[in-house]
Length: 54
Image 1 (cartoon, helix red, strand yellow):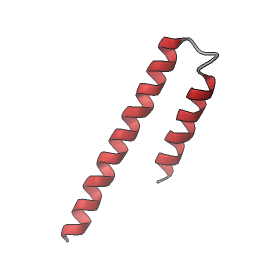
Image 2 (cartoon, one colour; image 1 turned 90 degrees about the vertical axis):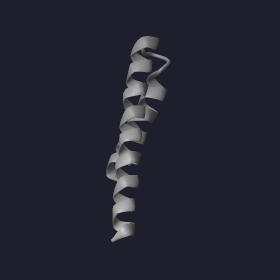
Image 3 (cartoon, one colour; image 1 turned 135 degrees about the vertical axis):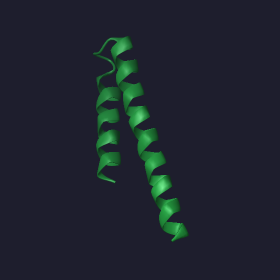
């Protein structure tokens, strides 16, 4: 859960800084955070499915 909070905070920083950063850098940082969130969600879903079966 802590990773999710950190990822959302970083996303907020990137969105807030988007006015000052060049577009390519903003897109790269946003994409990295989005990938991080997708990986986190996948791991959580897999973990929940394992605990539900047991």
